[in-house]
Length: 160
Image 1 (cartoon, rainbow, N blue to C red):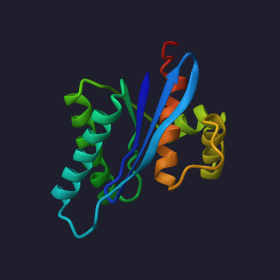
Image 2 (cartoon, rainbow, N blue to C red):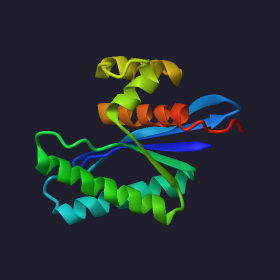
Image 3 (cartoon, rainbow, N blue to C red):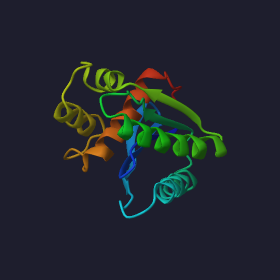
């Protein structure tokens, strides 16, 4: 089973792919999709969509998980992130992926055991759980891997 985790955004979208096989977790890939601010909003969304479709077609994940959008003080940013989540969900639907979302507190709780953990604590645990020598960089990619790990723990996926 391969899980695709997405940390949504407009300028930068983090992605991570984790395989669960025989009860063991293995890193498949991670990175970011960057969209230049010189592009129009619709071209940025098109770029995000195309990159996510490329990841899906290359790695063939069975599940996709994203971080749940929480509306804070900056509503303009939240709307842009919501658009990004929309094109990611479209890519998932068109490829018949099950889509899940988790709040930041759920991700932190699942990965560190503490729902108010700081970013460096989450990154440390991502590295340990995936047996990496260092925390994945950039932060958006590490966050996407944390979303994968959260999904693996909370979704009760079968051992294959």
